[in-house]
Image 1: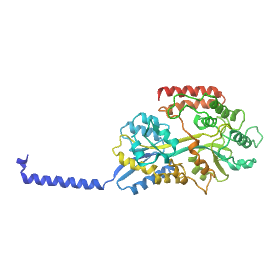
Image 2 (image 1 turned 120 degrees about the vertical axis):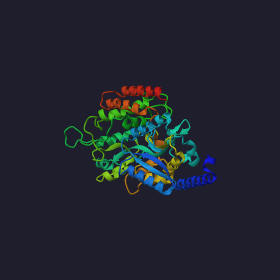
Image 3 (image 1 turned 90 degrees about the vertical axis):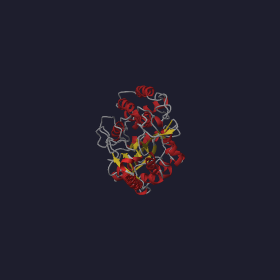
Length: 426
């Protein structure tokens, strides 16, 4: 070939090639690495906050460009579809329920070395980290603690001569308050105002009373080997929640008209700290505050739901180092401060919780309550088939709250369902 073209021609071609390579190299140096980030959250709420975080990261990291993929509905199904289609986002949010499924499927990048190199594990909520620690490895990291707590209508309490209970209080006080706030104003034999409300999901009401009774659904939520829901303390919790409806009459049965905390005809409601911002804007005609969920008098520590929301990197991402830079920002001081200041996310970084607290707005007990999250928080079983298992729990729990099943019968059905999945999953 050299003989055909001649030496001068070859040298000129070589110079042209080197010039083009140099141009490409200069362009590559100036280019930003694109990282796609998939997240949830409503417009005007958490979705907008994530966009602010993305913008701040892009502004302060000139070598990486995070491209937001906002998915306010159908998030998990869309994520699974993208992964199955071979086009997953580089970084994505991930709830705690499907975490084990994604780990078992091999679709999450192992973040252990990066996390331990760049952060101090002791600065983060230990309940969340224990849940995410899968055989000594982290495949996702927490950015939020979904803390389930008890909301109180303080104005209703005061209207019947009661005062706000302490943050940590017992079933006895809870029941007394619920009875006094349940009222029939028109004398038709049906309550117009209720002390409490139960819901059909097993982990939205029933599991709280099991925890408050000193029981649990399984022997170890991180590595469960058997269900403990039929043991005496767990049964005591299930009996108490059913009695709220059928013996004490302080909560309406499922299938009947239901009260609303925002409307003002419900004294106490199980909900989450994620609702603080909503209730601050929605409630203006009565005072409200929060406590831990109540406990049986012989149990020293109440227990309530803690469901960490997490962030992960696809194992197929072509830019894992750049993706990690974004995760570092999200779970680091600045990102956690931004998330906490938005008022909807209790940050996983313990020192950032102070930014979630609003001294000028309700609830008054937020500082004391959030200081005790570490001991209060409980997690659901870490199972690869959790979504399917929960779908089977709910109709059984509904039957108990309608009086169609005894607490003992429900417990045995929940045990059968749970242990069947234990045998299939872990």
